[in-house]
Amino acid sequence: MTAFQFSALFVGALLLTTLAKLWLARRHLAHIAAHRAEVPAAFSKQIELAAHQKAADYTSTKTRFGMLNIIFEALLLLGFTLGGGIQWIADFWLHTFTSPLVQGMAIIVSVMLLSSLLEMPFSLYRTFVIEARFGFNKMTWALYLADALKGLLLGAILGLPLLFGVLWLMEGMGGNWWLYVWGVWVTFNLLLLFIYPSFIAPLFNKFLPMQDDALKSRIEALLRKCGFTAQGLFVMDGSKRSTHGNAYFTGFGKTKRIVFFDTLLSRLSPAEIEAVLAHELGHFKRRHVAKRIVFTFALSLGFLWLLAQLMQADWFYAGLGVTTHSTALALLLFFMVLPVFSFLLHPLTSAYSRKHEFEADAYAAQQTDANDLTNALVKMYQDNAATLTPDPVYSAFYDSHPPALVRINRLQTLSGA
Image (cartoon, rainbow, N blue to C red):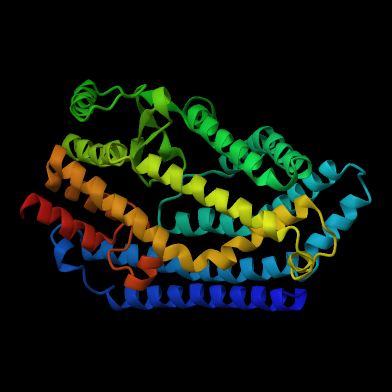
């Protein structure tokens, strides 16, 4: 393949991906608008028309703004690659440092920081305009900046040593470097699973032991019934950032924790909370987390092998607007353009995730009353202003959870309703 051919392939794939995303967004908007005037029959007794229309307007606003973000991200990628942005940054650091490892780290960190800064206005608008307009945002400017600084510091402490190690292995381990890098990547991610609940998550939120003894006893009985052991039950102060609610378990091995958003506990009944937790436990009992970890690690191994082949090809660099060859530039270019070529795989990964959600719902229906989970989901859809009428094609591409109507119908079947 020549550099020109790869450039044409890249531009064609980027154009196809961008147009597909915009087409899906327009379908989604049209479908929501067509069903805005009436609550779906399955939800007519639980959700008022005003709440249904709020969800439609909230989703439509986010989708329209997302279309601007799609165009911006495509232009930014073109600017960094064929526009010469990465080459300009590389030239600057190549004349500043003599060590290839330091040069590589400086190039990658510079591109990542610049990308984050350029995309920050979109994040700010989503948080302080869209979320605020619909009554969800509780984030203050001080908290936003504090989160950003903590994230930056955490990224430096954890990310820079990892990046240095990866580049060092790519430089020094010969043709099989990708196996060594994969081993380091797997180890790093497993380590994060262990330390995240106790050391990372508390940097951003407060986690207090559950104080409601009656609810705690009820949950502990469910855990014993399901054969699940956890380090503790915690309530997270999610309300300081948003009114959205959720529950999850985090950690690995003996560090597993069950976490409830305070917003969720304030909205659901004890039976509904128990049903939501049973759904999360269903993911554990069906080994969904382990399966996803194995799938991700296998996929990363394949990607690293592919990178090892591409980094030897002159057309790979030149076709993306870079004349300088280095392991760092190969790594950077590969993971910047990978989403462009893998977008059409989204429906497969989404379908796999939705399959797991159905299985977790089925498990919850075995351990608790399916009607309680149905009621909890309806409240969560309403509180989070999640649209009840997503476009089916859009949902198939993006949604990791089944559409509300499909999911509720399945639960009603399980309950015998």
